[in-house]
Image 1 (cartoon, helix red, strand yellow):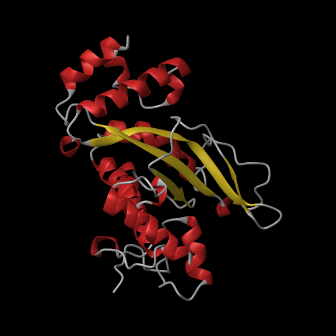
Image 2 (tube, one colour):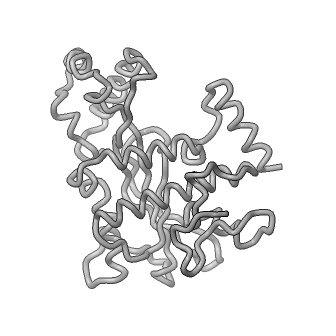
Length: 260
């Protein structure tokens, strides 16, 4: 029944365009984030995902963690790190630069400063509201078919862990924008490798999440997403406990394998 409900919401979204599916559970949004990560320069990628990369490395190297583990964590390697990602419009690639400059001026905003800001910590609450209004106006001016998306902001690092009652508890960090995220990374503390390797790992992780979104609706994923690996934490649990699901999650030696 839950699968049928999820499929019905997705059908209404696809057929009629209503926003009936939470973005982090919507394969279209998750995949849009995956593709947007590919467009980041090396510097942008390190700026956005460097703290998470360091947090993962701290489980394998003697380095300081950006985020301390909560007091309730009993097994450090059993944590799940979560990072919210918000999409935005790539103004230059969408051909909206001149319109954006004029609109920013009308909102008493500095376009050059705002276009290089990726974290909420650099902007006060009043400016956040102004930039949100600016973004809504700019999107209204644009042709939807011409919009190119990029990564607008990422959250702090949320930490999930099994508490003393055996429940999955999450200590939530600050969120960058006052709206729902478009995808949420959920990573176990595996060795992340180099930044280039980490970018590829995030690509695979988000492909696995797209797979999980379809599995949660009772559907087999499209071919590019028939991969084996760890995607959404809750689905890794479901694959372990419910026979109705194929064995999508990671098995020894199967990383990156394709489901037949």
